[in-house]
Length: 245
Figure 1 (cartoon, rainbow, N blue to C red):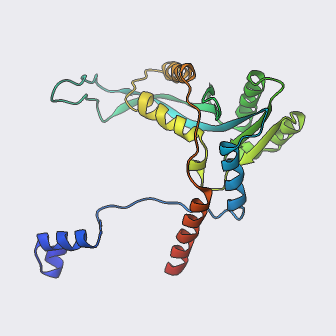
Figure 2 (spheres, rainbow, N blue to C red):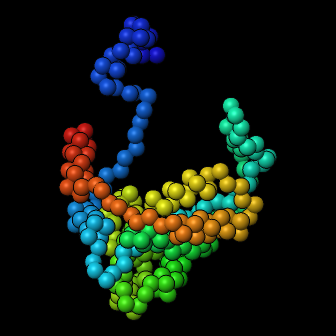
Figure 3 (spheres, rainbow, N blue to C red):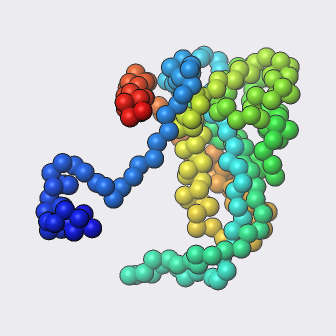
């Protein structure tokens, strides 16, 4: 189409694009944080990853909401030589569940609970589950996002009654900063994407097995990105947007 529009050959268009490093067929998504306390929150969270306080536990907490129990309309075929495994493009829905998860950054173990909804009531129940599993002598630092349920007045009241818990909120639009998102990505790729679930109970059982398997061979979370480079990249992004407007 470009070659026809400008009156040159398609190979010439390809050479020009290649010479200038242009890929017009690709579009990458982005979201820059507009949080006025972006730098302070970033350094706070990264500091917990890189240099956690002594005699404390750092937990990365979030919920993976509305996980669907999907059953395929026809049985798929397993992979064999020269052919990938198959599954139908359409499916039957059999309900949803929400996974609340807390990743222990130092040990790599996960506390997980499946619940039907993800309101502040369920979040408080999950906090109680964490409270029951974490040793009493430990201070608990919780990293989480700005979801409304995490800041509900009753959640703040729960915090007042449990002074050993401290919440650290990530900047807005920065879910990538929350370590538990990596666990969710593994769960989706290794268990949910190809799964066939005929009811919510099957789905929850699969999730619980994955959590248990993760805890049998836990891997501590290691943060490697330089926060100064992240801040510089975000500044460049804002400058580029401002130049457009």
